[in-house]
Image (tube, helix red, strand yellow):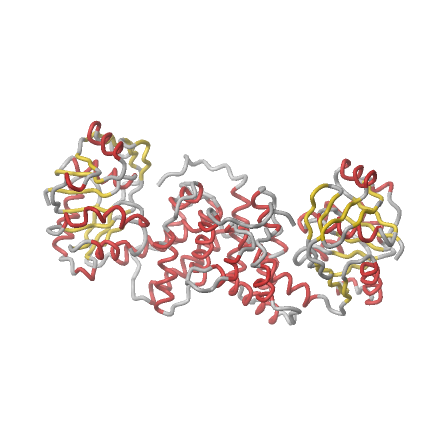
Length: 315
Length: 315
């Protein structure tokens, strides 16, 4: 794999782009012209867990772009079609890896691009300070495996994982990536939904189980429900989401959906709790808690634009 | 019953005070001196469904107050002890009616005052425009019955109901007021919790059940859950909360808890969804949805004061 394209350069996309640019020809396909200009002129600075500066190519114009051996889609799950659509034809001889949150992005990618798709889940975390500066935080792996419907050869997955590993990031090729994806999905959907509705960051409350009204009981119940959906769908989990939650609850990290809610941006709920709720409904498996929180967050999004005919709030 | 005291003059308290002042000696016991002053100087104007002006006595000082035949506690359920405590000794020869939201206020009143307690539920609604002007909206009944632990004679309940009815408001004395209280409780807790978490008023979304993500499914499930808790506690319902919801969802009325959330005021969740969750837990009855929403709203209240150690929201 000689030429790589990163689609979407938020914090995760910027981390992939910067690291890969050190070992192979790397392009960034971005939405804003000033973002592309800054990347072309300055490159990317990584600080934190890794510290370096690197140059790369960036553009907003598909006509300037060659064909690629690998794409990594790192946009928000809600923006996959918009981000990948205009360049989807450039990966026919290669493969496309989704590193996005939740469930369902691979299906969107496979519908847009006639190529091999790789199911990916990343636990890396970072903070994007500017268009050209990203801070690397958790140095954890990208788990990847064949997306079943495109019959992606495992050798291709291994090649992509080796390329990512050679760039200094962690990557693991798995024959079946669904256990990894579902482990993170259950963790992520539970924590993000509760953060979105309470507007608490991933604080100690999420693991507190002393009193009847403690939030930890709800997180625990959401994760048990997610695990039972996974089990009944035949997906064995990779890690226990509740253990992941206990660690995360010590960080006060603001989950991405909390950021979205605070800024009234469409959330990824359809790919997180909504994906669990829908998969469960399709298979006739009960998932009342994920379903309830999914509908509340859809209602919350609706409230931003709903023109109420009512007077100001009163009794 | 010759002398009545209204404790707390929000919209509901103001409606009771103004109507009762037309037919009997009526006092308002309020918290703010300027509120008492305005009521003493001007009285109360009622507009809307009823239109009149009336004078009454108001004070913030228990030492100025005589003994009463009837008190109506109309404060928020969260403020019962604070509102009633200083005057609780003035009702020993009479009775105290709670017209508050939810479940649990009668217990608080009975613990504070050595007298008969009347279990009340009101469906009246109004908007309080100023300290001395309240707009009367829904002209619906106060349902009232004996609070069982104080062995309140039914004759006393009837006397209180007749007094309220003679003032122009609707009132119904019931041998058992729990069916009425639980009907409103289930309706109120479901609608308030969903409004608090989505920040939608009681809009059409609350009855919408076409698509998988529609909020009406959640309201329906909350009400079914509440009904099953009531049934297993042996309480037969007075009205179907789902039918009440379908009517309410056409009003865009902002439920009181939505007002609280918008103004970061402690909500009545402990007396609404929290009361259903705790009663169910005590009796070993499952109530996962009310319990989940209860914990989310407690988490939301917590977020207003939680000093996060985290940086601004990022990925």
